[in-house]
Image 1: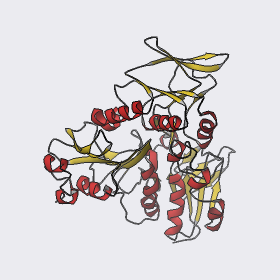
Image 2: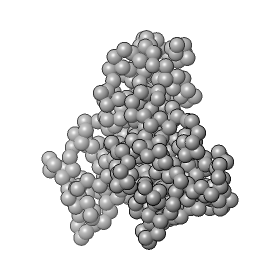
Image 3: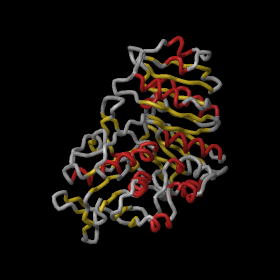
Amino acid sequence: MSSDRNFVIVGGGLAGAKTAEALREMDFPGSVVLLSEEEHLPYERPPLSKEHLAGKKPLAEFTVHNGDWYRDHHVDLRLGTRAEAIDRKARTVSLPDGSTIPYDKLALATGSRANRPPIRGADAEGVRYLRTIEESDGLVDDLGPDASIAIIGAGWIGLEVGASARERGADVTIIESAQLPLLGSLGPEMGQVFADLHRDNGVELYLGATVEEVTAEGGRVTGVRLADGTAISADLVLVAVGATPNLELASAAGLDVDGGVVVDASLRTSDPDIVAVGDIAAHQHPTIGSRVRVEHWANALNQPKVAAATMLDRSSEYTNLPYFFTDQYDLGMEYTGYVPTDGYDRVVVRGDTNTREFLAFWLAKDNTVLAGMNVNIWDVTDKIKALVAAKSSVDPGRLADSSVDLSDLSP
């Protein structure tokens, strides 16, 4: 392969850094340019609401590579640099200063941003969002035994911040418009488990509730007021109501976009010279059999090897099942698989949800396993993956029976 080829990666998070790493591991001899809007070296996002917020892990420990790595591997990392536009015909990326970078192949890893709904009063001092290291550091500085925080949204970020805040001694209130936490992700059966977990740890939950406004005095947050008139006092308000994929660059370039950048099994977009990875990739999944876009760390970590192979015109497909994890209080959980938008038929539990040591499986009507979750039970992820990948009907009774090895349920 010619050493004068130039590959450009747009996006300085985990997915972008890992794409650069994969290209060098696959012996690409040409130039690699990595554009990052942030001023920090690329880092992983999960610790922002987990270990870093809990004061257990500094930034250096979840930075993907130190500065020397980029120099030693001849990766032209440009921090604080935003890609303004893509000219697919000229095969260039435009920068804010008017200059352009030519590319032979282009990887889009632009990630996502925190949603900012139009809540009255949300411009007050003390209203927070969580997507960057600076935002996490701000919470670390302000959360303590004398602090109180109202969290709008009982998704993964809201619950993880709530757990970390409680462990730091803060008073925590979580407000969720749905009837249970994580209802869209896990359904009511497991949503109830997380509601009980947080209540048992002193969190006040308002479910089926709508925030009318953020209240303030002298420009500083004093709490929130709900639509039913309930007033909740708080020193800080975290808005944690999901994320939006950064699709503007791809859309303006004329790439196929449908809730994400449309890519095939090899992560190639509608332009054969452009791939997309991570949060933005709406990926035609060979195992699941449908298009999937998930905003989880595992995709940002693992998809880049396939993206790099595709950029190098090597045959490769991304077949990893969706995977994510969380740690809240004494609950550690891993989830593997994918439940389609039309839902599931039932949840089968192996173990005891009251002791929070169990497995849960989401089944389709034909008793195939769509997804599985292990809670405080470890070293079973590979067996869960095998059940999901098999797409074979299982006996729900045997699935629920802890005496039956999960391996015996796979064909």
